[in-house]
Length: 195
Image (cartoon, rainbow, N blue to C red; front, side, top):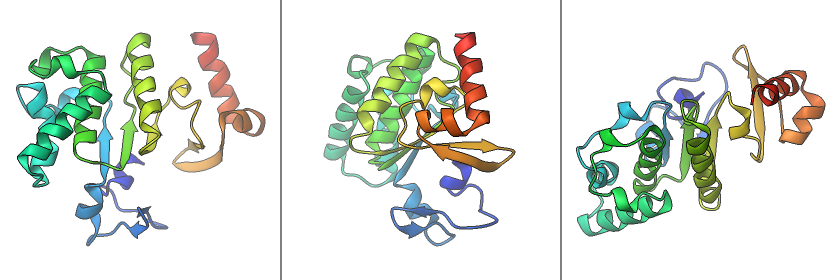
């Protein structure tokens, strides 16, 4: 699903619209500039030797003026609680800090849509909770799409889509799905028992 949204895979049926514009060969590169993605493994996204340079990578490639880049980097690092790590080496950060760095990189790019692809699955509970709080703060100004197996990550979402064997089988809020979707209810109960 994440690869469809950012145009790495082409939809076989239907169409994908981002910001009211259909995603196709002509529009894919422009629309990608509005979508930021935070992957499960942030190590694969590290591109620089210093945190602030890593966060600046996106806006630099988009041709943003240097003065604006500095402002975006500072704002993004502040939003994810990483301002004090500005001059640190990204590869020395913890898993949770690297995920926050990935979020900052996405924000500095000016992405209106932020896609989290299993972004909390490898994190401890404390780091997961920090990322969840960061996501909650982003909701005010961004569209957030979360692909997750861990239901605690999405429990507060406006709408949850349950996908089974590649098909959307139900959708609704957490409370609605507990009443209407056996798959969702079983997943939720299993996760609750294991936590």
